[in-house]
Figure 1: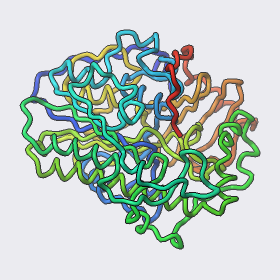
Figure 2: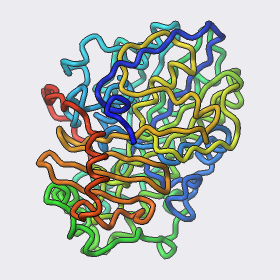
Figure 3: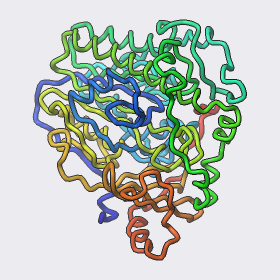
Length: 469
């Protein structure tokens, strides 16, 4: 198995300076709340994501990528600083990374590119907050704030009794051009279309399929309500879950509200529609890149920040430590490095994105990191990989995922010491908690060794909460 030193003991990983070489541009695309309901990942039969599928086919698709935290701010903080929540104390959405004491002097990803001679441009949701609320201002040469006109043209709530605050869904009154993501993608596409005097680190944060699921009607029409398939759900799924896990599953009581309102199919339809809208925005970016002057020298890294439940384990949204929350989307295409059609099934962590980009683009040392480069997986997606993935939701609550897409283990330990254990090879839905079984004790002992040695204290909160649903 894996020693503590190999995994999460906070060992500094310092990158060797790579040999000088021509610098590629980097197109860094983030998609909010996107789970594996993408054609190339097979999470939902019949989902229409032609642009994501095209990009995946041109490079390496990581089919078992997992977040460092199952909610926006800590997940993105981990990616953009290269440090795990247990190291930074950034566990929740109202804790700006800049206030975390352990991060004094941290070099963020975009800042590192800027210091390495790149022009750094961003728009949309990269850091937490669609308008760059928690953004690293020093690390951007320009950060574009866009406006969501659909907020003023969409009647709400549209989901009737299933609606709760921002948890709402239904078609907008207008078209794509009224959506925040349309403006964001257009601004980024404009930069891709023009010859640039210096290498670019260009970040585009697409907000859909984040709630509310309000997108133009044509995307709803792709998914007739009578053809909607519902996730497979076990009615007594929470019976063998410890109280802390049950509280996570029922914290908003969404499943009860949505099913009582008879709105499950409509909610699934709306999530699918939002995914296809996001895919169309990715298509705008890819077309601008392909027809522009930088098609042959641009690395594209596309990722989502975490997964999403739509009734599995009687839960909706993210905010859990099960596979539906932790698994996300990751695909990378880089000229001269990746080859078309690559798929990697090893369980990998998003904490590795920073060190991977550093090595891929030949940047200098980035300081202390909790992840390691996946460069050799880009060259050979089937190469050996045996690092476990750590996901943290709130201080002291951790999940460890080992193995690959179809096998391995998921171990969960909550702050109060309660545990869950799932054998992914025989129980892909994580329906049977093995933690109380006598025959599981040896496996539990191995998994416990993979937990962080220390959980950093909570970082200070923002003056006002930054909500996320």
